[in-house]
Image (tube, rainbow, N blue to C red; front, side):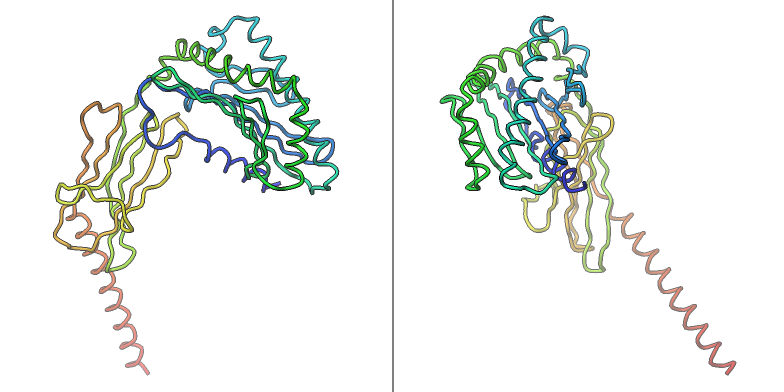
Length: 333
């Protein structure tokens, strides 16, 4: 049971928005779905929709009813449109699960196995947009939908992929409906969600940064810049040596941007340096909430020197005490 959950986590991480900011005025409306086929009679499903990185709707696991997670979601569309979407999703999920299960059955694939879907559209400042539908199998690319030509194309050479590709290309009505949803409905709905959810999309939280040091060995010092509490997700973190930016290289390592429980983000950037190298270091943070300013956190080398000094004193004292104990023991003998 643990493997599917690891696949789901990997799927989530791979589909998070990138680290750098999109052009001003761009936006993404994406839908994610996961199907865990535990056996021939039970499929565990989860579905959710995001506007940028805001999860605004899900499907209830058992009834598959739409759940609205932000107060602006339901008012953004007419009630009849929500009812239409609700019915479409229920029919789509039912038929997709039946089709995938039927196609996989002849190949005696061991359970559990996982199918994952991501679909949506990306809107750009000039009014253009891209749209997509991709299907993965056990975390590998499996099948994709050419929206412009209404054609399904497999992304791997397996017999199962060939079977599903052939089967899906016979579902003319499904493909035409999906083409309409991705070409027209997706962008139209996104524009409504942007209008009604603008306060969430424009929310800004200031980053909080701290710099501290770790000494994995006497010959190396690791400077750590921890930045947390910021929103939106896009951020730039760099190290400065004597006021000049340190270029990316083997001495620098920046973590992935990770979510906090309060709907903000965090990351760490590490710089390896030689102790007492005579340079000054600072961590520079740039974020939308700071405007044109930068957050500059200098590293105080004196604190590390004091810490190292205390550590050396403690080690020397321990060694002296041990030597004294050995000398005392030998005298008694």
